[in-house]
Image (cartoon, rainbow, N blue to C red; front, side, top):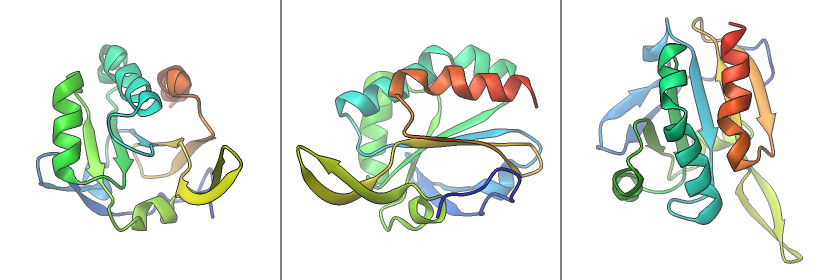
Length: 154
């Protein structure tokens, strides 16, 4: 089930690309943008991460914390972030617990085949931990514009 606008964002702790624990509730006091993506170093996911990177000054100006989440390992995230110079955090959800809690894991289809996978989406959480926006089926190149629009209104 997808998280709902106005609800408390489910708390979690995951390893970041450096192997350190990153906890959502520790980010309180700043808005948070979580984006969910299928796999490191694939075309759409690279576009999505680079879109955040290319708008990083606007996220910093908004005081936002940004984290990408996929089922890849912390080691894979470190290579991906290093290759493209990502200034934001990437979190490893190898057990797909957070993906499921946020409704970002479900049935997908590609070339007529159905399978379970990451549903590309994003969530904006306000400084108090309340879900301010949910973007389903987001286009990788539209991630930043949509999130920054919401952040401007917080």
